[in-house]
Amino acid sequence: MALELLAEGKTYDDVEAETEIGYTALVGLKARHPDTLDKRRKQLAYDGFEMAEGLRQLAKKKMQMLSEDEDQLMKVNLKDLVIPYAIAQDKGFAALGENKVVVEHRKDKLSIEDARLMIEEARAALQKEAIPVKSEEI
Image (cartoon, rainbow, N blue to C red; front, top):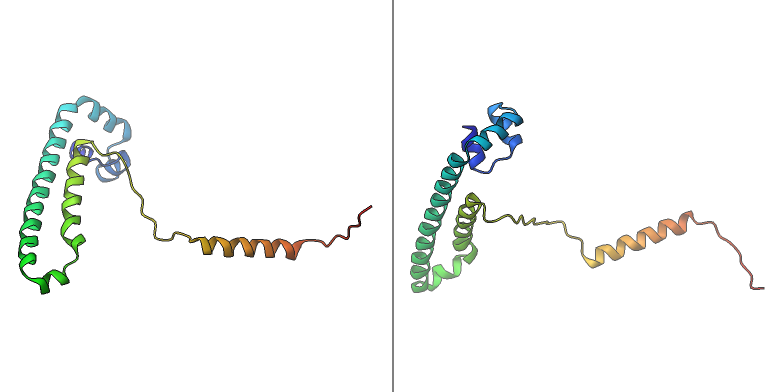
């Protein structure tokens, strides 16, 4: 089971939590069974690509059907057709260890206006705490 989880790309911490096998033992398992891990990764990749191909064919068929029915076409969002395909494709590449980039999507992005308001608030807070000083030119 531990080899299966490692082949799926789980972290040592995740595998340890699920199997109660320690880090040292997991590293040893991984080192002693590279062929088993590689074989399982290839099978997972094959499964992912097989799913992606099935979804691609379904999306193509659905697109052909929608192209003949304007009313239904207007109701379907294109991302609903292609996102599952892209996810399956990504999982296949992940199983092969080919995609190492992690993209983080953040919803709470600050706008320029938000930044401007924060700067104004900070300036006001500093002015509030400032000690007035009189100065004269000599």
